[in-house]
Length: 180
Image 1 (cartoon, rainbow, N blue to C red):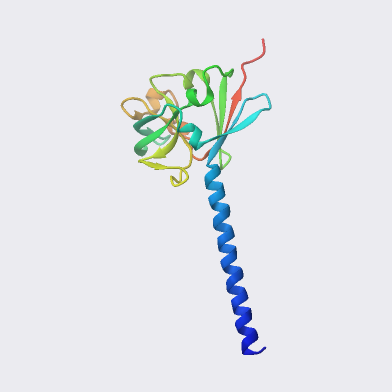
Image 2 (image 1 turned 45 degrees about the horizontal axis):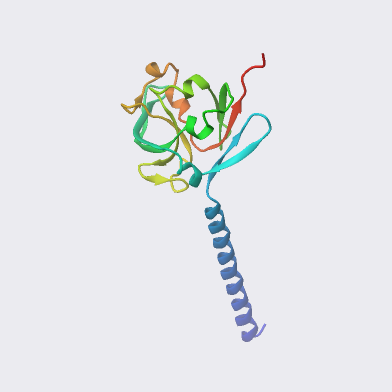
């Protein structure tokens, strides 16, 4: 191979590499414009994705929060911002409970009564200490945000209040009430 052929090969390789970077950046930018979101299934076969931009148009709650885990340790203290789950789901939605699914497969079923407990509002958090998803690496997260900011296992009536603070939520499914 001549020197000229090697230079051409290097130039072609460089241009191909540069083009790959430009294409990858464009795809990432396009995904960012669509925005991150969560899938909401109505329990009857219908589903829609609620994007961050739509969530930010709903009333939001910003409050300090922390929780006790199953070992009695207090975890993840900070300021959370998000929309109350009842606002995200809609007051007229017909459900008895919701099933929350995380990216890693963890799931938790939460009864409607717990969702509607105004003393312990369940918030679909999209920001932590002022950092929003996708930059906030926990992704969308459930947070229980009472006025005093702390949720112990005893006061929440659960072996682990932390089990309700689901990280990386990807899907919420409305579970219908039992048929009469």
